[in-house]
Amino acid sequence: MTKIAIDRSMVGQEFDHTVFPPVTETEILAYAHAYGETNPLHTDPAAAARGPYGGLIAPPTFAVSLRGAHFMPRDMRSIGRNGFDAGKDIEMGAPIRVGDVLTGSSTVHDVYEKTGRSGTMVFIVFRTTVMNQDGQMVAIVDQKMMFR
Image 1 (cartoon, rainbow, N blue to C red):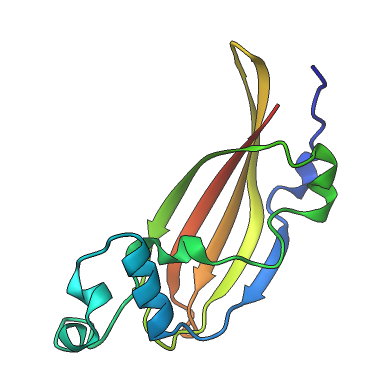
Image 2 (image 1 turned 60 degrees about the horizontal axis):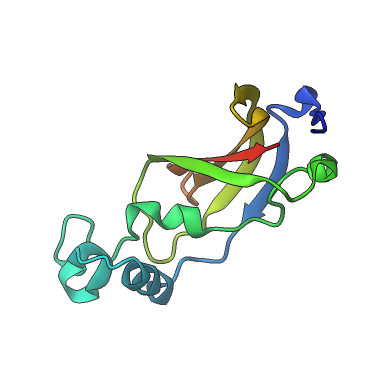
């Protein structure tokens, strides 16, 4: 088994900064439908307009669907694409509304090793902080990848 060499100096450095087009009602409704959402705040524009947010809002996990220009730092491509998704943690912030212009900023948040029955595994946590046009945090998404 080959030892994976990771440059830990990249922890904390931004590798992607993407400004997304304004969120549309169609995107919110499609996302809610795809995940079987039934809450009218996410599925019924008329009912949502009478709700506490005054309009349709995206389901809480909507931020996970955003894809920046770079999934990982260019310097890390040498480890290959043989990584496995090791889970996501999501911290929710302000609700995402129709018309919001979201900005995602991604960094390598952490790198650590674990030894299991199959040998040493390297885990890399990519953190994406998503802000709206008002500077409010709407989500922090930690994407964990495992490499052998």
